[in-house]
Image (tube, rainbow, N blue to C red; front, side, top):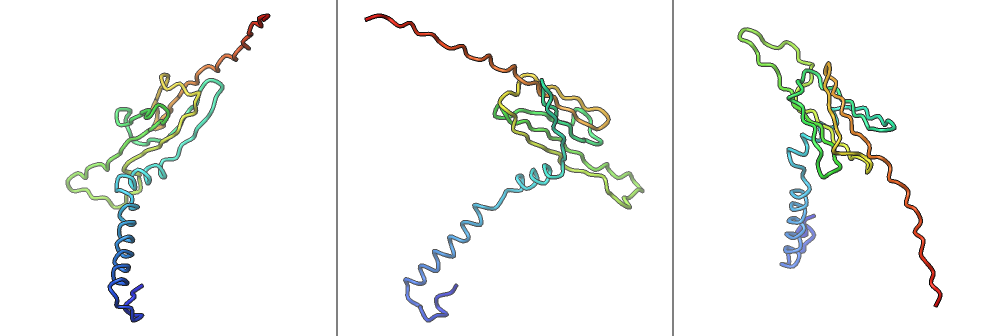
Length: 156
């Protein structure tokens, strides 16, 4: 809104207008997502996963077509966040050949999962077979129930 259109040319209104314009610009720059954030968000949305719970483990199954096991990273961050990521690049064109159609997925694959409290982050295994990654996170044994503490009553 421009206060001058309404006939309010005073320095006070000019200052208020400047402050309002500045705050809008500031909000936009602080709220704008970074390129890395947008790239990771797209990668997570495009990487479907199945999660299964067994009596003694959690199993995460993710399709990773065309990737070798050395290209895939499985990490635990902050003691409870499982991050699975990889990147597949387009094959280099050989001289004299050009792509007529490209439909296979290239780029970053990524998923993040918050692990439950009973997940044993020291016992995680990952196997990639036929383009399917299976990550198994063992469960911690259930805590033993606490026995009631008996307090001796003394006679005063």
